[in-house]
Figure 1 (cartoon, rainbow, N blue to C red):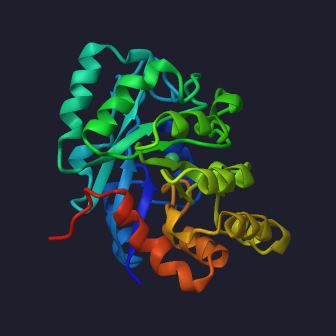
Figure 2 (cartoon, rainbow, N blue to C red):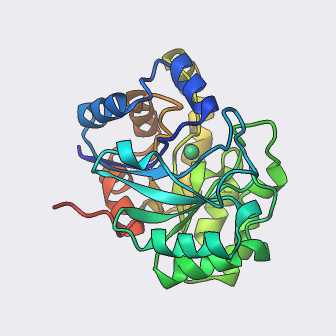
Length: 281
Ligand SMILES: [Zn+2]
């Protein structure tokens, strides 16, 4: 089965390098290319992120528009421009406008919770205007933060209700299924036509951790219940959050969660509807 990975990382972030080393992932161009080809991942979307100094993430002092390591990014990987709201001046916004017109730009990433603003805060309004202008989706970090410096009140998925109501034509991707508030995300899907979900980063760790947690049916059933409640598999996309786990482990985990008759939609078709810039030549 061909796969599109709707959420991965490829930039120099110390916390990711450490996690990759711990989880046995080769976090390099060579490692990425080999995992993509080994698992038939034919395209992917890299979430732009930078730090001004090693270990600073989440970093207020880095660029207003954060990108992936573009020079080393394989040809079949697109990117979302990451936003640092602390540095969103007019120069950053014009730079963002130029980046959004690049063929390889598939959308925008907002790091809610890491940056302490609600997603419907006016500070992000010019970013949403640009997303609407170029008809690009906005991916919003949601749920648990991968840093104790984050604040959960800003990453809780219910905060996205305000934004989706204010901008009914903005395509919004709730990252990580908003875990652990997955039932709230099911409600967002039910209520709003412009909400999609990526299933990345629900677990992070090595093979032992994935095996131990995902063999607990009580744990897996929480997700299956929320998926039934949402009742719309066209809104869910596979994503790995690589390098926080290996692609193989994460694909197997999502296959256990999603009924097989929906694999084609979740692992491939839905990503092409959300990230319309993804093209195969
Ligand atoms: Zn991520």
